[in-house]
Image 1 (tube, rainbow, N blue to C red):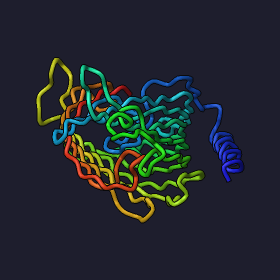
Image 2 (image 1 turned 45 degrees about the vertical axis):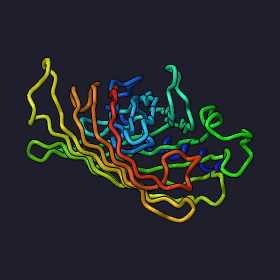
Image 3 (image 1 turned 30 degrees about the vertical axis):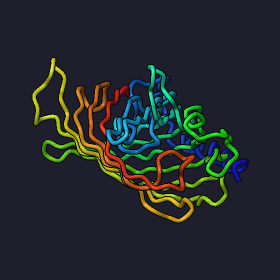
Image 4 (image 1 turned 180 degrees about the vertical axis):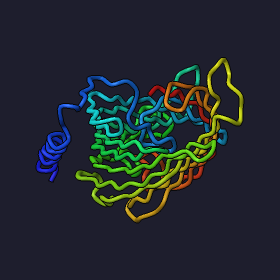
Length: 291
């Protein structure tokens, strides 16, 4: 199915561009900023940061970037961009002698197409992504296991792979002093291992920002925010996972900034090597925004 899907996708994109392109269309190479800001509470988004779990002093470390490569501005309100995404997040179970002991890691890479329509009091955006996700156990897992250290034993590494297409529809608007974005989406995995995992999944969420409650710091806005992301996926039985964040950002909403936040996650383990386990965690996080 994958071999036929990608050519059809490319053909569809070409047709959309041909339909929309006119002499007034403005082509952008390496446009500034991002046409679609990453979803704040979604684990599968490019970000740079560290999340500490006080209960056991473990860490979740995020490293990633997303970038718009090409853009087509059809008029003052309609814009289409194409970009790439590379990201990973790792489970750190110890840092003795200043050496991180990485237990597990999830890696992602792929691309996106984003169509955004600006409106009088907000915007409507459609983000299509095609992402490859693979997961691995790392040396930290090897060393914490009891002898004999044999990763082929039950509970050892699994060949986890997931190639999925995802469509997110998001509506953003301003309500008094609050900037609000809510969204929903659907994803389908064209290639998946282990085979017991279900291919379709859905998600929805919201984000609320306010930069008026606290005064500026060094002429930069101080934003209070709350974000929630819910996912329904089959691993192998369908169940929900929810992640909520609340915190503060120094910097404008659509520009670079520094964030500190509280996090609460409940649901399927966020590390795919442990997809069959349930998790319930409170964390304290730090993130750097770089649109």
